[in-house]
Image (cartoon, rainbow over the protein chains, first blue to last red):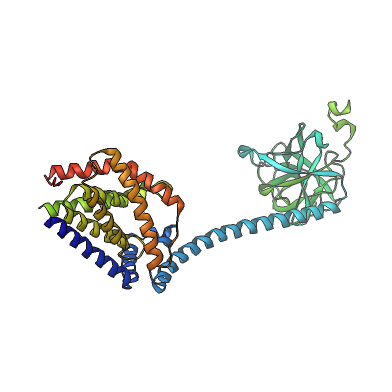
Length: 283
Length: 162
């Protein structure tokens, strides 16, 4: 009986203390102390969705301090993601402008042809071949001339070497197996240029009496029946001195087209001489 | 010695609850182990001691939670008082009785908490989801917690059932 009384008294005292705590404005103070301790010892809860719940009883001024830090963290992450988006947008704009320039320039071209996207490249023979996403189904034929439009200029990059139904392989001008009859200047002296396996071509036999200068422009020769004539190929970048034993001089051609960054090319459909049309197409 | 052992038990319980809520909660919901333990302690320990621990654990819940300070202390004290008042009429050694009692007291505690928060904090949100889920979780966990509390008390020879 005595224990029951003491139990009731204890329960009443605890209830009274609880009510007193409820009535007096101590919750804010206690929750602020708890929030400060938790923030110091275990700040992770303030980074999650639980933050609002745990800060519910904390006075506004303290809540602002905690939420400012959290807001700052969120904003930093947002800035990072926006920076990334900005970079992506810049890249997209740059790509769109490049494509627009190419399309605008493409409209002014005097040749018939089609655009193609470079779909593959041989890493072991970088300047040898590229693969494009157009083939015979799109009217691409073997030995068609392929150009690229970069910086507002059309430049030769090679010719169609292999034409399949939906893709084709292009032999680049830098390929060691590639040789092109070129003219030094418009309708100038015609000589043979050969690929070197790099981004340059080489002219081996130039008569020594021919006037040459660095930067002289090189075009496909009118007699180069495999290619569309008078296409820009590049410029002379280095002229080698004549060897004492031979009467020829040689020179390097820096190709106008940047073979390293080819993305789209233009395949020109031009009329090939009958002897250059593959037998399958003749039939 | 007994008080120290019990204090150690309550500290372990608080840490256990904290870690459970952190790692094992289901969609943010987890059993209210403190309430269950308060009910178990009220069932098996002496009356004054049971209500004292209920009050202290309620204060701990208040400090740890975000409601008004004193709400859980009052609720837990009231629950402990109620349990101890009816403990002679029910067999709290029976697991089904434990589950049913915890289920009902979970509702009582939640409704009291909601009323007190509405009265003293002006920011109470009534959650049907909470009201439906937590009592079930508590009822499932009740036999296990009662078993632990009883085992602990037996181990320290604290069994003081009247």
